Image (tube, rainbow, N blue to C red):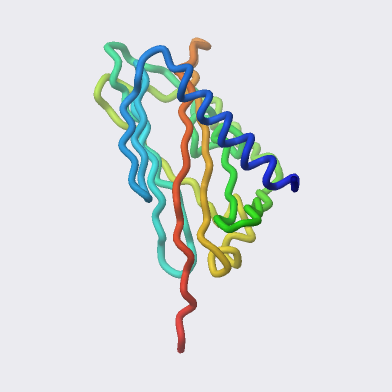
Length: 178
């Protein structure tokens, strides 16, 4: 079995295990482009958007559905850090080729600031898939893509919500003829 297939299989099993160990069921409404997940304190909506040209972004919303105000470090938001939101993009073909992701560290001292998320309020952000996965621009013309993702919200006091996880589908792009 190839390394790539092994990674995809392990991610799939890991996601299914996470879903099966939830103490309380969470709301999950899936289509091929959008996922909504909920824990006791937050709802997370994640959606793939194609912007002009070949730019793909994840639109992410976190909504506080708890009875208390949540304080979060800015760097713990899924769109602020390269590593807080676990992302894997794979070609949806029989080889399941995993795209190489951006490497590096972003050092932004303003990320140590705290963000307040009041009851019923929503924070929004974007993650550029093209920046995180530089080969996505070419891969989208070869095959459909699947974006596997996982995130856990940690508050400034150190408590954590249940881990979210799922996948989104990006259909193969057709080159435009001039």
